[in-house]
Length: 327
Image 1: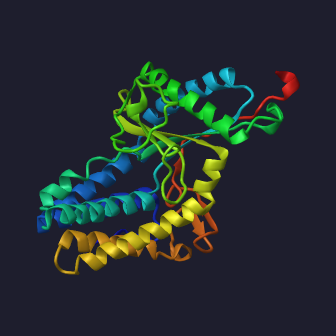
Image 2: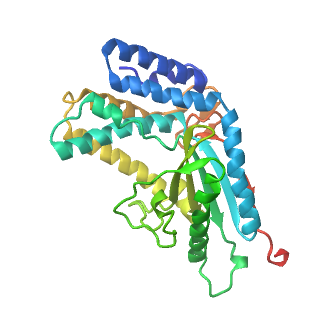
Image 3: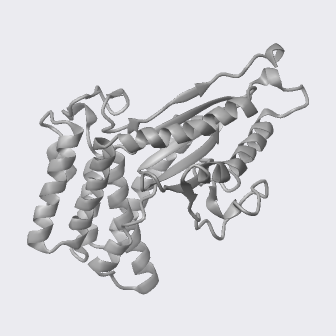
């Protein structure tokens, strides 16, 4: 079985690793009539095209920047950042194989039988966040009166901004996608006409405590999907360096182990291969990896200059809050 780990120790660039891994997967998939590996190869080609052809990213980020300029005029008292990234090779590979495990597990729970390769393949076509932009806002204490609560004020502005984004970006070539966030609480602070587009993890946080607003757009100019996330600085800290980050990782590992316990090895080849690829990535010692423009002393001290582990940066734009007397 071919895995990404086989290509991480030769000093190659991320693009060369992607090209070789994708090519070898495709060749082997054709020989063995493996529909899942063929879909996997095509998924990697999507990432290659994102990394090789940057013109559309310039167009896209410039249109996103227009919303940044709108916010600087509308909310000069807020501090905020706009960050864009292409999902890293490691995270994309983890997510692809994680989707396979999740789909097979849920299918068995519902139907008491294993899905066909065609059914699995059909459910691997919904990646919408290979490109993502994050807007993080903060309201400085100096702009508040003593009786105001900073957290509630920031959330108020977060929803206010969320209500404007869909219409603003649709005027610039984006189309908002329905979220499918059915059966969960969505804040009434979102207006009726845009509520169905958002996944509202602020009103309904994940079990780890993670909070954010997520909305997906199809970029009609670039012909690709992109996700926009909105958070307060406190939410961002919790997600990036706080317990939500750690607990999510631990929960994923625990869920994968429980799925493995439920599905004995040898009963479903698609599950076995996806599980092995995922476990190899989770146990990867990054200090041993030799990828051009990447260096790690351990799995915490990392300098990623190529989007291998942390993702490739597209932006950022940063806005500092104006002083009170400037207002």
